[in-house]
Length: 249
Ligand code: G6P
Ligand code: MG
Image (cartoon, rainbow, N blue to C red; front, top):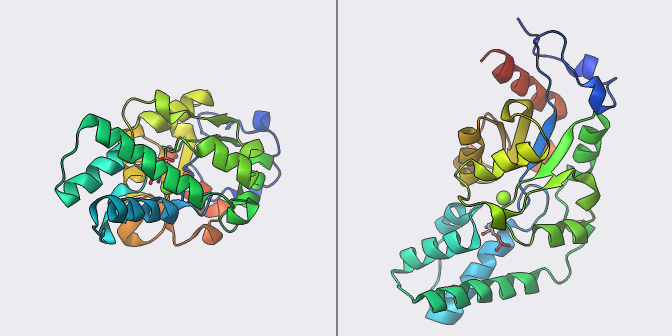
């Protein structure tokens, strides 16, 4: 059977073409990333913006637990969750205006966005992946993704960026992660995905991609492997769990 500890023989690999398995063994070839809360310290700003919107438009506060429910899902899906909670029904036009207003509030929070907002360890981690010949793709629901990658200086680390506006069913559906694997011309089995949202872990699972969660057990306990924070992510552990799941399936 397949050895699960491969860190030693991987350390010498440095190009994509070298990442070919021997015989029928598969190699991990792609890493797929969520953005907010995985690469950039922007996740809480989304919910801060929703709170401001609810306060200003309806004089209402939002409970903490809504943050977990809106994490990872699109702007309009998030607005639906929030309006449901508030038990408020609005016209289509008003819905559109509210979504637009939330984005204005959120974008104001991003005014000073810089490489300082890259989460701990992530720039080094992606650099290391790429040195090992692993391809990278962004699979974020955020329409602000390209802007955030530019401002944080992370764009150059990505082989592909999925455009969420072209994806019909958002997370927890598998579509956005399947689009990311297709963009890298890899199969879901050859990839691993990094997520901080329940919806994102569900999306990865539905796509048949090994999932790494970043956050608490309450947030990403369903992931195949979990790290409490980005600073704890360790390549050897990721590859080990990937190999275990993929080659023992
Ligand atoms: C990410 C965040 C969500 C947000 C979504 C859409 O997935 O985790 O909280 O709703 O992006 O972001 P956008 O920037 O397009 O409003
Ligand atoms: Mg996220």
